[in-house]
Length: 245
Image (tube, rainbow, N blue to C red):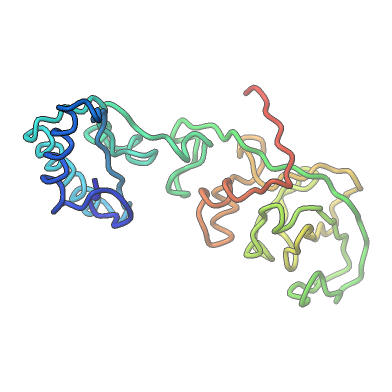
């Protein structure tokens, strides 16, 4: 049922006709109506409440038409965690399955979630440069002092957004630093300052904050986006290794 997202589902003015048609076809054995659901727009508490009220009306109309769906759901991760009245008898845990905060502001530990995705790489090259050296395309970053630059072989072809340039945190050799300069197709650079770094040192783009790694939400906020996009945009060039938690 469309309850305000205006994306998919049956429009309210069509509910009665569709429910009656569904009941008719249940009678002749053509279909079985097992469930009824909707999706919230997340436009704020009042908008979600209005959608919930409309959904309740839709459920009532369906039952008036003689339908008796056994599965009813409207809550995704955020609502499932915060609203008992909207849990019904099923919830849809999407971003929560990744262990990522649905609002990118509440720490995952406060929600009882554990991040299950870590994006790792290793330092591919190291070079020492003087002050005033341009770094990566367009020289969007210029070294403020003599420093050490670490090259990480990940870029937007792997799923690192170009908007991470000059703003996103990464953990390099145990130190949280900021990507320096433009993210390229398959690499980015990190100014390590006076920190010691060598080829082969571990890099964590995002992972579990309990381990000192930037979270997907940390990375997302820096890029001006949401954790959902960060964890789902990592592409097929990344090798996926599944481990027991």
